[in-house]
Amino acid sequence: MYDADRNLQTRLQDIYIAPISGTNGIDLRNALRAAWGTDNSVSAGYTLHVRLHNPETIFKALQITGDATWQEIRMTASYELRNTETGEIILTAFDTASESYTFVADLVAAQASYNNAVQNAIQVLARKIETRVNARLASRD
Image 1 (cartoon, rainbow, N blue to C red):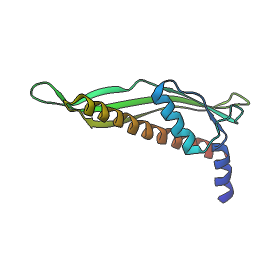
Image 2 (image 1 turned 90 degrees about the horizontal axis):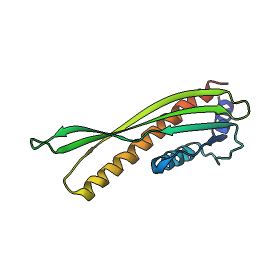
Image 3 (image 1 turned 90 degrees about the vertical axis):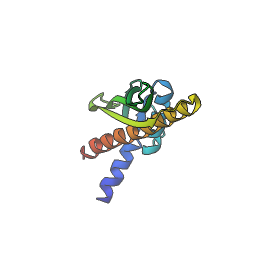
């Protein structure tokens, strides 16, 4: 069991995460790099390509005046893991993460709530991607 875990850890550190567009993409890529402890070399054995879609905002609660008071941010990423040497597609998937937040009349507070919700959703998305990739690489033994 220990050798299998060490073998998996070695494979996880051998993943190149291709650049992901946008500020949110940078945050997602950094979260994945930190999770796997990869040095992110282009010569790594595996390459992960992630397409992060723009966040969607959904109104969840409205006041009698029609003002939104509760919103949800939803983020979706589609991704593909390939063997860098052979080009073999090892995993193709997509995941979605969402986070609810209160929307207040003060614009600064509303923007801060939105930004916090986006960061939380990115972390959840990173954990979901990490879990799927870990499971797929572990099943290759």
